[in-house]
Amino acid sequence: MNKVRAQAVDHIKEHGYFIMRKALDEALCDDILAEIRRLDDLKIPRSLDNNFHGHLTTRYYDVLNYGDVWQRVATHKSILPIVRDILGEDCLLNTFGTSIIGPGETAQSIHVDDGPFIAARNSSLRHRPHLYEGGPRQSIVLNTMIALCDFTEEIGATRLVPDSNKMPYPRPQDSDAWMAKSIPALMNKGDVLFFEGQCYHAGGANRTTQKRFAVTVDYCAGYLRTQENFMLSIGQNKAAHFDDDLKQLIGYRISKGGLGHVYNHEPQGLMKLVAI
Image (tube, rainbow, N blue to C red):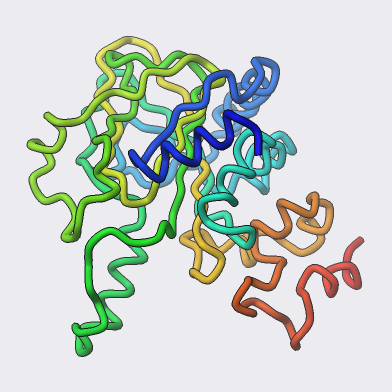
């Protein structure tokens, strides 16, 4: 493990986040921006237009079904090894899309990204509360925010509460109070912010006349059901042309605990039989 990778893993475990400088080269960032402009021109519908996700924020999902450039992002050499160090070799792609905060967008509420999994778990344990101990636990979600422009406080840099990954449940209630304790993740184009699923965070308010361009790539542990159902949204014929790492990330791999097999076989092996 190289020095930067080790530093990243240690900082994420200790403080809940890490900013990797110059993780993506400018050429790749420009390719992603060009693809976003293409999606804009195609008038692809925005997702999640609401009070929490924002009314002036452009969120494109299902991006793996669009330009090939997206295939180079989720498995990037600066990102995936760190994700696997935190979540395990069998981790999965959880959600993958854009986070483009437009001028005039207000700040998001402070929240965590492992919330849907905890909500599902708590629901299943409603009648067995003795099985739920609460408090910090092993990481099950790791998110990344890829800066496609310079992140300043004024343009809406992601807000973080350092060390909040170690705080016990319940999750944040008074968003304004936690926002006052947060810091902006100041980044340059090509930097990547890693933040653990329990880390309190939020999108910042954009007080400029420019858009804040970013991509979020969210990963989860291999034994969880992902928020985006990539196995259904991406056809086998398209997925067959993905590299092995990306195939595994979207579910074409048996997890460490033996989950995800097809007729007791590795799903990626069966894919080869139908690939065009």
